[in-house]
Image (cartoon, rainbow, N blue to C red; front, side, top):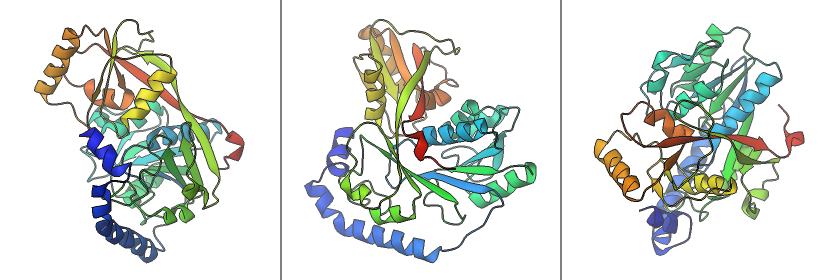
Length: 333
């Protein structure tokens, strides 16, 4: 299934050509939508949007974490708003952490939202698709708040943004260059004229189609901070390894592992935001790793946000990564 997706979305194929008329309609709707939403709610705080124009993983949340920590180190009062995709609070607006605590119900807020709360100690995190209401709640609860970062909000036009960061991953790039459903673009590349920064995550050549828009480009990479056991203790994986992930761009995880000098025998790949609640699937994975004498199963922090609350006997190790910016001098907040 993954190979079929890559053939039709990341490379030009007969199917992608056949879907071009639908992509043209989708792109036209996207263009008109931006023209119709010229205003929007204005917050008293500085609003920073981190988003993308491609479907699938590009690394928005690690960039959000990086920016939030950067502002925090500068002594700024910052909070983060996330939609809470596939979480319990997606259709309401709820603080899941404050400046002192991660609340008990945070685990129900969705994998990425929970990850933000656990990684950003001392920074309030709110879940909810209604970004205007999330901002209002943050303003009401934190009068001294200066910055609010909206994770995954480039297409959210009901709120005015002060800065827009658009993230690309070197592996996926712009795919075959077509809009959905023929390609991976959620909007035409012309939407980049609304960006303030382009973040290019990973090693590789930046498409000339991206460079055309003459925006500041921030170059970054993932670095493994540590690999830990399920209790949070740092460890060095030895023996036969396999990977387990349910993320938008599994090749990115594989690259991170290879760059750390580690080898793996198999990658158990699942769709983005996979919940791992199917006991039969977990049993199949468990049986296979026992059959192949796998010693450890490396997984992402995003996936462990769900796996830690599920009963299983998988020999998990968690790969903790952080986003590093190479050209810090280009960042002006």
